[in-house]
Image (cartoon, rainbow, N blue to C red):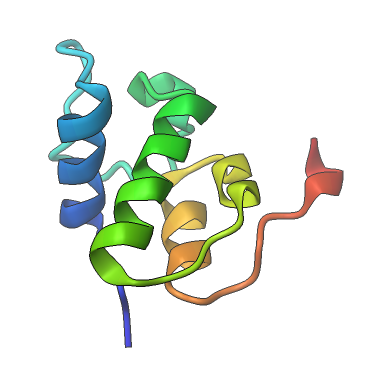
Length: 87
């Protein structure tokens, strides 16, 4: 069972970190790196806090190391953590 889907993630990011007006978040953004979408690790940390509070899931701050929305959703939905060795 998924805790979070892409539309909910983009809503959380927009509400908590704003949105770069030049980026269309309504398209297929699953594999676009967060910096290209206008979001940095601080934005992800804010999203993590909201997700933990609103959905009752525990996430490490390491979830902020996800590079794309697909990776972030995998972490949130109980998949494997992104590898720190990829950096």
